[in-house]
Length: 130
Image (cartoon, rainbow, N blue to C red; front, side, top):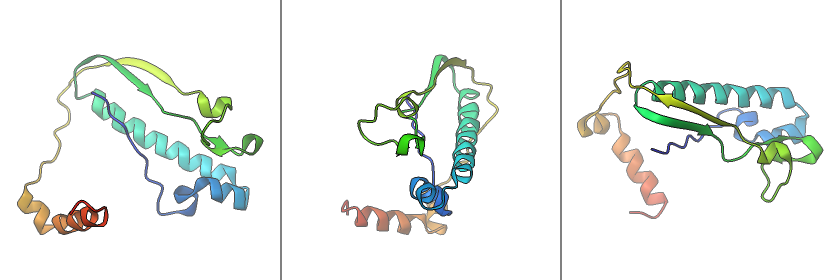
C-alpha cells in the first residue's frame, strides 16, 4: 500500500502561499510553525494508519524538503541542489492492526442529504469529466 498525504494550506495566507508570505513579510517563524503543525497532523494520521493495518515494513518519507529563504530559496524549486530541498526523511517501522479504529461509513443517501453529490458533480464538470 502506498499512501500519499497532501497538506491543506488554507485559510491563512501563510498557509495558502507560505513562500510568498515569507518573501513579503520576512516572517519565517509563522510559516515554519504552520509547516510544523501540518507535519504533526500528518504524523497523527500515520500513527492511526499503522495502528490499524498489518505490515512487516512501513516506510515513512517525503518527496522533497522545502527552503524557507535559505540562499534565496523558497519552497522546492525544480532542479534545486540545495540539501534542505533534496534531503528527505526515511523512517522504517512495522504496523500491527489493533482494531482500535473503525472508520465512519456513509451511504449514498447520506451523501445526497449533505449535498455532496452536487458538489462532486460540479467539481467533475469544472474539470471536464462530465
